[in-house]
Length: 155
Image 1 (cartoon, one colour):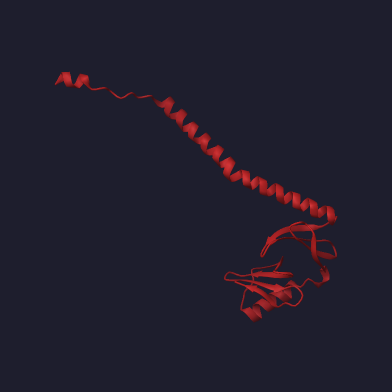
Image 2 (cartoon, helix red, strand yellow):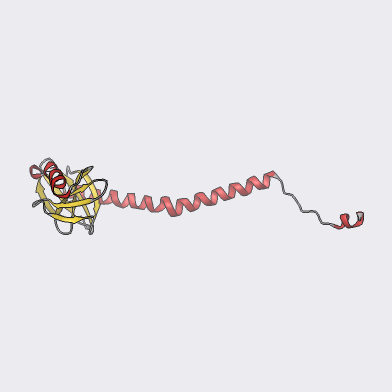
C-alpha cells in the first residue's frame, strides 16, 4: 500500500502570487471592456450633444436652456429673453414663439380639470408637428398643443 501512495502524482500548487496576478488580469479585462462598451458610447453621445448645442448657439447667439427632446423625432429647444426656439436634427429652426405666450399654469390647469392629472412636471417639447406642453404625473403623460391647448398625445 505504501507503494501505491508513492505512485500518486501530486497536483502542483502555484500559490498566492499567481492567484493575485490572475485576479488583477481579470479586473483589467473588465475595466477595458467597460471602457469600450459603456463609457465609450456615453462619451461619444456627450460629444455629439455638445457639438449640436454649439451649432445652435452659432445660429442664435445668447440662447439659453438648450435641451434635446425625442418624441416623434429628435428636436432641440431653447430660449432667449424674448423668444422660444425649436430646432430639428439638422439644427435648422423649426419654429419660434414669443416668450410672453408661455403659459405653464394654463396647461397645468387643463391637465387637472380635463384629464384628472396631478402634474408633477410641466415643460416644453415638440410633438408630431408643433410645439407642445409635456405634462407628466405619476400615472400618465400628456402633450398639449402650445397654441390651442388641445390634446396631441396621451399615454
